[in-house]
Amino acid sequence: MSIQIYQSAEDYLETILMISERKGTVHSVDIAEERGFSKASVSVAMKKLRENGYIAMEKDGSLKLLEPGMKIAKVIYERHKVLTDFFEKIGVDPKTAEGDACKVEHNLSDVTFSKLKEYLNKAGQ
Image 1 (cartoon, rainbow, N blue to C red):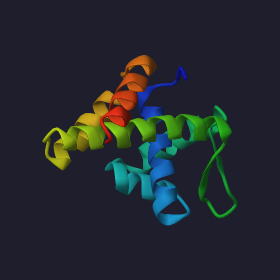
Image 2: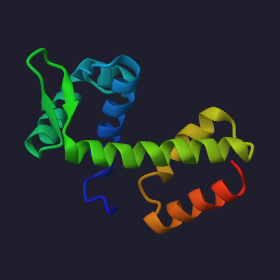
Image 3: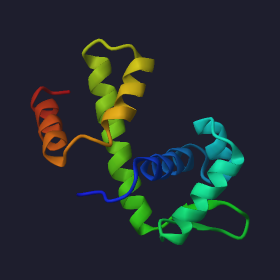
Image 4: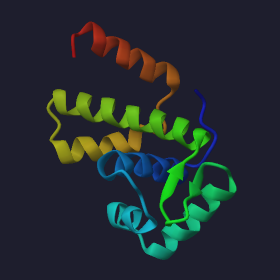
């Protein structure tokens, strides 16, 4: 699946998915706290994501991933989890593994990621 949006938008969509899995509902303030960004920056980003059809804002102010946003968030989140786990398994400390996964998840080709998953499955990981 080829993703045609900016890395920062991918990060926001992934963050919305991660928070929604933990808390159920997501508000802009949750994203600001999670990412360490100002509420104003998050508001601007959420407006752009809404305008582009990736998220919707509910009446209570909570954010909801729409189908296009959910597709992207799931791809990035899967990459994040697989890469973090792989890095930890080869001996990278969890904090570094997490940070490196964030850097790599956006730039790794679909072919390479697919081969990595295939390799890990064969290795029984």
